[in-house]
Length: 484
Image (cartoon, rainbow, N blue to C red; front, side):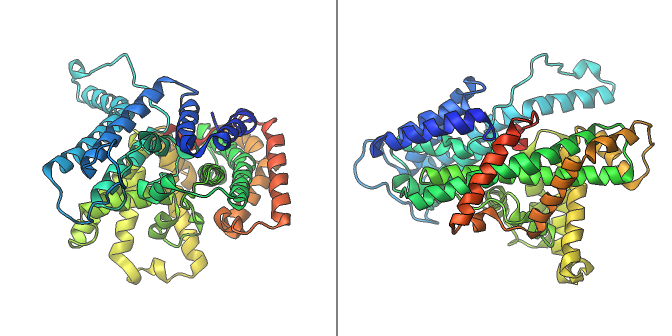
């Protein structure tokens, strides 16, 4: 079930909100958890069992780490930050991390690992060593998001950054909350720990949430989907002209930004309607003046998660330059694999790691940093476009072929001329122009919704109505990050 659908907008969401607000305070978390399980299990109810398993394991590990019983009285203890931990507490933390990473590793990377092994054996002429599994593992929706989110609970409790939860329904509510369950943002436990205990429900908060939802829906339907059609045509073509190839990858850059930021906007908005304040997940990423700056603006919940739970524990930048470069590359390679089980994502992560290492190595002596501000943005966007080729292409061979089209060295086919008749349709071109204006000249949804005037409210309602109207004519309506 996607947010940009009639089923969600006119049936599921109204029923979920009505049930939530009609439920007494003591039962709100249980109601929200049940609604979230229904949302998550809509496409495949079996996925709920996996989510429940992860929830129970991390809940029990949290109790062991905190040294409490679910039936004990009093306030949940906050462990001393930086204090010593017993072997039992460390074992509980390890169990939580190993369980979540094992779930993620098996369901997301089993097919990739066996396929890579078979390809390697075949290349070496060792056909008898291939595995040749007939059955393939199905990737559960959102497993990359909720395993990271659930792990943050035990880590935050262990570090003394947040109090544990004795009420399992409250913890199940945290892990399964449907607004950001399948595509983020990744909500760390420490960010909502106190909100799970007490939060406010106000008309102002609800109205801002509605504004987030309307703007996010408009970004998805009017900007992401048309850009996605252009990108799909470009990447499915046998060969492209140079201009068409660049137009196609720019379209994909626009699609993935508006698609994911739209989902984040709607998730944050629905969270506000339920009384939760989620952190900002995007901050004009294509206005970044470097790749380092880009990762401070793009998918902030993931980049900050990787920084706090992986980069810093590895040593960060505290153990010399070479160790810092190794840590950066390790984090970005793993970040690439987090996005998808494919060598394309490994290359994508490696390129970002290489750029981050280069920027740190050259620092202020780099000519790149001495360029005018606008050129810094343009150069950064150019580097991002190159990396997005690997993110979008189906295989490494397809990515290399697309890059050859971008530099004009690919063989042209007569069909390449037909592509222009599709991707340069007036509606698509006009939406690309609007998208560029929003990216480099428009305000962020987070900032625009801080104060809602009557004019803004009317505009939000108009955007919602126009978006619903366009949905009736669109058959193309995917969310890219659902597959991660």
